[in-house]
Length: 202
Image (cartoon, rainbow, N blue to C red; front, side, top):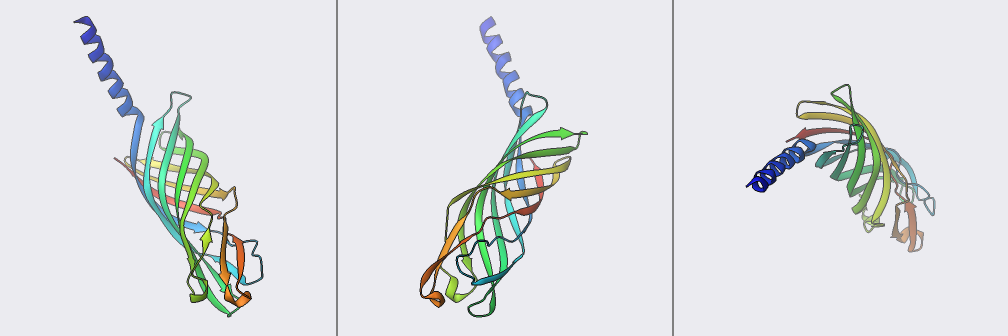
């Protein structure tokens, strides 16, 4: 009987600990990316002006029993764009790409409502293309790696944060351009960006 009571107490205590240590919710917001087309094999682009994109996803926060730290993994869908001038035809076009981001952030709470955090962001490009007939078929590397740093505030169930993301690895992309003899054109689409996000905790 004593064992049953001890097991029941332990189970109840463990469940309360888990419930108090793990938060989860949803998030969304805007992304402002810097120039993301670099190292073009031939001079066929000009500009690469930044445009605003968006993101949406889910997150969880796991409190660690070390110095008040927490781990915050996220799963986020992101869509970004750049405006470039296609010199071979003298027209402006938009380069769009969609990716899945998995930031794994280590953070701490400050002054009761503020947070600071940072960590790696693993990225997988789902699709990319140019908004012009000649440049539709774009092939991009799958995985790349970035680094995120940021800070935010949390008021009740609502949170607001601002992040800076820096790309750490190349994202090689290519397409075949009939205007340069049908040759494959290679370019790098690594992205540095400012991310503003609004989150809700369940």
